[in-house]
Length: 169
Image (cartoon, rainbow, N blue to C red):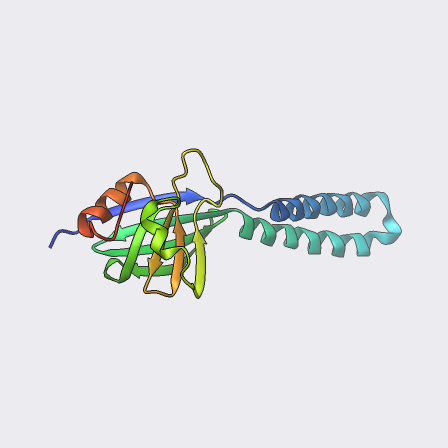
């Protein structure tokens, strides 16, 4: 059996709400730190506020700076979430045998699947439409719709293994 290994790392676009809260918490942290030195009677309140907003800014940054890593090894696709380049978490594992279809976002191959009632939609893609759009939709075991942004090499390898399920248009 031939073991094929392909790895792909994509950076997810942070939402504007996440960017807003991150900048707001950073600015509040700076204001509280300056208040420690400028307003000595309120030093304890400013110190506690600086700690709370600093920790909040750290956690908001952790959850807004996301990357997804796709690992394809021997008919299995593993999706990992990398948070702020410091923490890694395994999100999902998909068997290529159980995939119904994998095709580009606006492919005509997905026409039969568009009106399907889907239980779960999971987005592990870059989160935005680029030109040309390189996002793919994968329907998995009838109940899940997964949005991915794999590399061309990964699609090519998966197409060699399952040519009737994977389309590159």
